[in-house]
Length: 421
Image 1 (tube, rainbow, N blue to C red):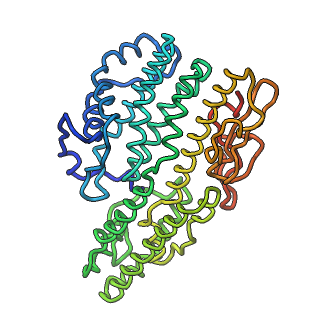
Image 2 (image 1 turned 30 degrees about the vertical axis):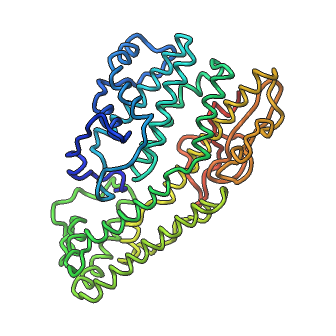
């Protein structure tokens, strides 16, 4: 189970924020617990029931608004694997939908200044969340996407000054240090602590618990509980079961030797640290080289070391892919906003993104080159090349497509439909 899906400890449930506070996190927690109901409607203009939902949650938004202007620091938990209670993460998403509903409502009532103001609150909220733990980061990414959606869908509504104000906020975000490094640091600490909890020093019998966790008797290999017939099981599940059967006698031998057990623990620790060092090095590389430098190493899953490292090592390549994709989206939105500013001033779109004077912010994180921008008549196309690092001609990845022989699926990354405006 991925780290960000594991259940939180009791410490997070016991934490009770107090307001007023000098920490934005306390406001976010209280606001998330204050949201009443939910709205998944994204229609424009908002339907009457959504407007009523927004009005009924004015208090939750005001609390969120107060927090968005304060310094943020992570004070939960005392150990990396302690997440917040699952309902709070759901509450954060509902807060994001509340912001998006308010933005759509402001647009429907022709109040661009209110739309920008509420969007700004949501952006600060999303930015604060994107650090410390993998689950916090991924929820923060989801919050950012929800908050941006009504802006992207109604870009032509906004004035030049409003577009400039939103672009300036995102430029500030892109040019100030983010907290993604804290996510990797938290993942490393969590992985090493998980190792110590799963395989404590001097307790080789812990390996027997791993085997029992496979619903398998360590000595005989027989199921501890009746199993359903294999017919109809997914092929990868059947292969996993066979792999566990091959690993059982190997783990049993190690469990009988305290020296072999300690050697396995040290090898696992070294492998996790090496894996994370690779991630830290990749993060320092120029855009366009990071994912290539962080290909998951091939591991022999039929050996105890390879199998357990694969289970315990953080999913850093997935996190880095999400990180680069989110930064690409942010840069695309900055460019879209400033292209509208340019159009309203000049009456046409520029021939090149260089006319926007964005300097390094027109660089695509996936290629290390400029975002793809093509002008055709009174329209333009703008996109990122996405994780394969190649310009696929504005091709949108199709549902159900999967990588071939480990390569990324061909396709480009857009904010607007097929990249056209």
